[in-house]
Amino acid sequence: MLEDWDDEQLLAALGEAIKARAAVPSWFVQTGKNAYAWHNIDAELAQLTYDSRTDADAMAVARLETASIRALTFTSAHLSIELEVADGSLLGQVVPPQAGTLETHTKAGMTISPVEEAGFFAVRPIPPGPFLLRFGTTDGAYVMTGWITL
Amino acid sequence: MGLRASRIRVPGLAGHHDPAAAALCTRAAAGDQGAWDDIVERYAPMVWSICTRFRLSDRDLEDVAQNVWLLLVEQLGKLPEPAALAGWLAATTRRECLRVATASRRPEPLEPPAAAVTGEVVSMAERNAALRAALAELPASCQSLMDMLVSDPPYSYAAISTALGIPVECIGPQRARCLERIRESSALLGLADIGGNRPEGDPGA
Image (cartoon, rainbow over all chains, first blue to last red):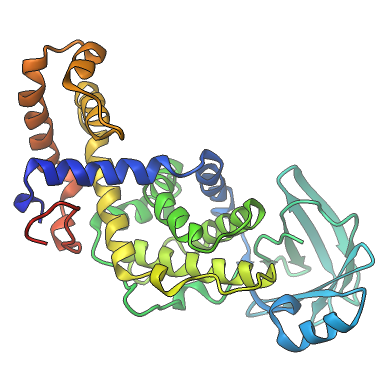
């Protein structure tokens, strides 16, 4: 392909390539580089399988209610993490119900809290920025959500 | 966050055979942070350009970036076709942008048909990444000259001569030598397989 290009064409292509890179904010690139911190972290990445914000029925209800509830479900092969935001708290449930530990990761750091046998947990206060939850079962298996911004 | 990323398939976004991407994936999967940084440097411009089609807030842009790259970290070593990394990233980015845009209750559809993420976006990203890699291999003197030659608005040869300390009459020959080195760069190996869309101004296009 390149062999067919004359100098003007090659130079124009270089210009496009340089311009495309220059347009990207440095924080955007840094966010990508930071993601490597999750390499080799022992955890299955659960998929977001439900978000009330993208659910037409839930949205219809929300329009009728003044206090709308945001609900999210992350599903992995072994368990689900259900989240609900209401009245300024973030409540969660591990399904099937089981005890374990819950890590809340934010850009500032990480906090750990125990999860009782019923599988309920609460994250307080709701992280103001992006956060990610990693649940550890009593068997030593881990499941984590993707980054969540509420 | 989204659906099982490895199964994402968007017609026309399959990507191409990019041996450099496959090699970087292998090294990053083995624990090489430098290789990961190279992957991000290569493809962040494509991820960014796709995001800009969706008119997202900075907050949503960060959400997309975090999740796209987290998904890739998780898939390193498991990608069915690491040489088609750009296509996988394009499809994943598009999916994440749609998710975030929908959750943000944007009133109107976000991806105008004219700005659809197509195979051409992926081809261009692969070509741009290879060209930037080729440029990075050049001596600093060549890099500075190329930067000034492609700048918009363009510098005059007189200005280039002053800035780089080379006589005006040497700029033309130097330019030809630098471009020749780019043509011969190993960074462009495999690019022959990548889509053949030529840059603007090509009479044969």
